[in-house]
Each structure stands twice: as C-alpha cells, then as structure tokens.
Amino acid sequence: MADSPDSSPGPRTETSDLLLVVLLGVLWGSAFPVIRYGLLAGAPPLLFAAVRYALTAAVLVPLALVARSPRPSAASLWSPAVFGGLLIIGGYGGLLYLGEESTSGGLAAILTASAPLASALFGLGLLPSDRLGRWGTAGLLVGFGGVAVLVLPQLGDPFGSGFVGPALVVSAVLVFAAGSVLLRRTARAAPSLWSLALQFSVAGALLSAVGVGSGEPLTLGHPAMVLPSLAFLVIFPGVLGYTLYFRIHHRSGPTRANLVGYINPVTGVLVGLLVFGETVTGLEIGGMALIALGLFLLQRDSRAKRPPRAAG
Image 1 (cartoon, one colour):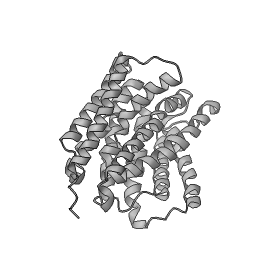
Image 2 (cartoon, rainbow, N blue to C red):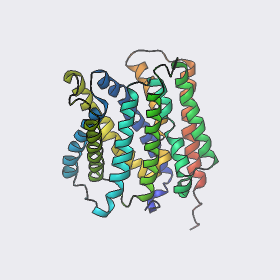
Image 3 (tube, helix red, strand yellow):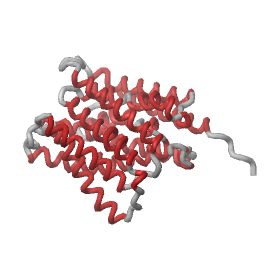
C-alpha cells in the first residue's frame, strides 16, 4: 500500500529527488511548445495525444524486455491502469491538449503550476503520512509565488480567447493531482517499465476512443511538422520524463513529485535565454530565486519531520 518502507526518504534521497524534479521540469517544460507546434500544424488534439501515448507504449515494451524488467503481478496492475493510465496520463493529457488550443503559454504555466497545491489539498485526508509541515506549506506557497512573478507580466489579456481553454487546463491539473494521490494510496508495487507501458496503452486507447467518438479527423495534419514533434514527445517528455516522474512519486509522494509544475516556467525562461538569445530581467531572476527558496523550504520540511535516529 502507500506506506511502504521506502516511502520516507532519507537526506540523500530527498536531495536526489529534488534534482530529478528539476531534470523532469526541463523535460516536461520543453513539451508545452512542442505540443503547441503540433496543434498549429493541424494535428487534432485528442488523436495527437493518443498517437503519442501509443507510440510511447510501443517503445517501452522492448525496453522492458531488453532491461529484463520484472513483470508485476496482475493484482498490482489495476491501480496503475486506472489512476495512472486513465487519470494521470490519459485524462490530464486529453484535457491539456484541448485546453492548449486556446490558452496562452503564460496562463497555462500558472495553471499547471497549481498541481502541487492541489495534490497537497487532495492528500490531506487520503495521505496523512505525506502531509506537509509548516516549512513545506510555506515552500509550496513561496514557489507558487515565484511562478506568478515569472509569468504574470507576460499575460497581457489572459482570457482574451475565452474561459473554455483555461477551464480545461484547470480540469487537467485537478485530474492529474487526484490521480497522483489515489495512485500513491493504492499502489502495491514500485513502478516498472511494464506498468508504465500499461499506463500509456490505457491512455492511448482512452483518447483514441474519445477522439474518434467526437468526430476528430483521422489525420495528423502536416506530417513533416507533426512527426518530428511526436518523436521528441515520445522519447524525452514521454519515456524519460514519465519514468522519472513515477520514480519520484513512488519514493517521495505526489506533492513533491508535482513540484515539477514550478520548474516548467523556469525552463521556458532558460530556453529563451540560451536558444533564442532573449534577455533575462531582474523580475525573472527574482521569480526563479523564489522558486529555489520554495524547494529549499520543502526539503527542510522533510528533514524536520524525520524522527531522530536511536542512539547506538
């Protein structure tokens, strides 16, 4: 169940998981503009996501065979299939792709950054052992404030395209947060390449059915533009990103794993600086500093909650 012996990470695990969150933020943060690029190239959102997830599953299966990943028992697969496949990957991805059709990147960054806050609220009654202390709560709020400082000046007219897109993004965040908490509570085994392949297969099947049922065209738009986007999304945010995410989720819990939402806007700023030669303002530096402070406070909270070791 949720309270497995390794669910209380030690100092080295906490530090390494925070570093992995930063790496995950780079991988997932790069996905937002690539998804947007594919949508603008004419790919229908649900089938675009479905093909991405099906291809990711197809890559994970041979990887599991080559790596000789242990096969999980059938009894342990229902939780990843339902809460991972239907909610964390399928539900979140479908709603996010639909929302990104009419939501600015800045507003989407703020809305998706609410994932750790939503996870903490969902976990209050369901995951008492993962509940944050005062330092952790302060860290969540400070980090979210850093995201707001980074992104708010770029919004302009955030609801100029209406409220449907932002509402879909918020729904995606809530589905993701609820799924991550429920998976943490019900999972019986550590994540593996096989369970991850199952989750992507379930997500792909779900979104294929919904996409076809809603009448989306059976085309991916301009192949020369969409296929490179798919290749990138499958390998980096997909195989690498979700493997990292479920590892952090299993070891440190959903709230800390979902801190990745705080890293995504930082990734956007750094990509603009390193790739496009954009200047970094003092306000952006201040926002990134607040996010770093929030992560530090969350790590301090984990250490403060650990009971002292017995003498001898």
